[in-house]
Amino acid sequence: MNALLVFIAQCISATTPLLLAALGGTLSERAGVATIALEGYILVGAFAAAVGALASGSALFACACAIVAGALMGALFSLSTVTLKANAIVAGVAVNLFAGASTRVALKVLYDSASNSPPLLTRSARTGSIGAVSLIESLSQPVTWLALLALVAVVTLVHKSAFGMRVEAAGEHPDALTTRGVSVERTRWIALTMGGALAGLGGAHLSLAQHEFVAYMSAGRGFLALAAVIIGGWKPARTALAALSIGALYALEATLSGRAAIPTVLLQALPFAFTLVAVVGLVGRVRAPRALG
Image 1: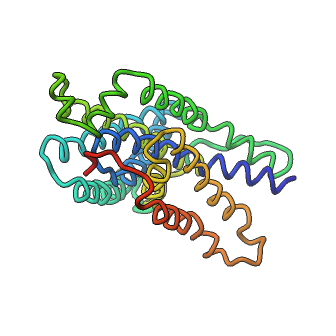
Image 2: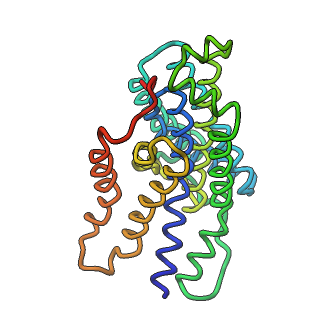
Image 3: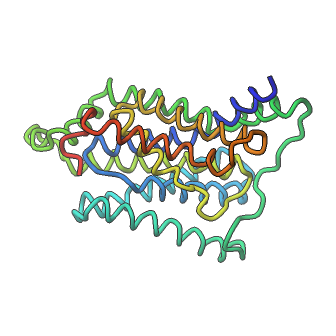
């Protein structure tokens, strides 16, 4: 039972940043812009949350800082790809590199460290089994609940709102959207900025859950989130299930590491191996937005 509680706690913790980044990627890619910049969004969001938490002592303020930072990165990506017509893949790589380098420089300037920040919000002392404590800590993270709200909001936005229809048109038939007098550029700007805000909030979970910011702590989660978007067929609900599946593999590694005969390195490779096999297996079976890329 204790191992089960640990697994559930780890699954919640691992899925939260993936889910938020994947929802952000879904919005961005449904608008017709290939978005590999999710890794940079997550990293900048994690750093902004750490700075906010250290400055205020408030987890909610830290989340707000992460949302703003992610939105600004999304706007920067929009400026490059939508307004200046830069290649989205090249611009995405540039955003990821900029995020990694700028956060390390900021760590050195603000905290005289190139690797990690000072400890953030102090863990509250709890009694009970390790599994129960882990589960309580996972459920006490504000980003976990914000991720559930974000899922409902994005599903509603995409399938039930006029803006969701415009985003879909921008990704499928941008010329038709222009004919209706709606700006494709503005629609994509809004979608990409919102996507950055969601992924930035996902980054906040990393630093708040680990109680510090560590350089490059996104550790490929942005690419896994993008894979979840593809596996989910660019549909938010299916994407959420794909993110949960990847999160469960992360949780399996965290739960079994040191307890099973399976080498840790193989457990760590499970999420990436799964996404690779899943994405390759879906080639030709899922259809991306027509204007994507």
